[in-house]
Length: 219
Image 1 (cartoon, rainbow, N blue to C red):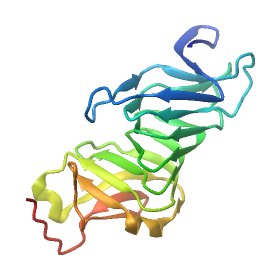
Image 2: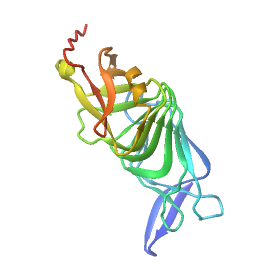
Image 3: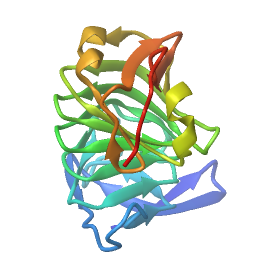
Image 4: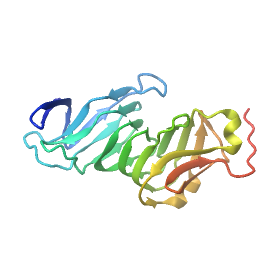
């Protein structure tokens, strides 16, 4: 439903209103990595008859890519709620400051990406991160929890760069749990899995890199 929010008695913000268990089902209509559902508007979290602060997030389902470029708001005071955004399928691309929800959960087979800022992210076993290595801006996570094996999918990498590859995939400003599980993460480059590349959390960044002495032959 469209959301109209009066701010400071003057400005009116248009957007979408969500409740306690809103689902955004975004299917893969493009058939490629292009975003399938682009949300440039604000998302306003509220109950039906109550503008008070509530724990409210949403579920992202469907095999497509949902891209967020707007803001996350709640109530008249514009403060953000402490709900959860659950990435249950496909890809969620966050290109704006979306730290309002207290937690993001990414299930196995689903992906998180973008160049914005999010709060605490819990990656289930089999979850992944997608990164365009040609872009300078990184997705920023407040904290990260890696529950098991996962995958980093890189695009925009030149084939001759693999032997010395070192790509910052995300910035992590707070604590990292499950660092040991990153040893079981895989790396795909331009759609091809490169077995010898490794994933680590170091110096406040999630990185995909080639170990010293790596020699790669691509057939």
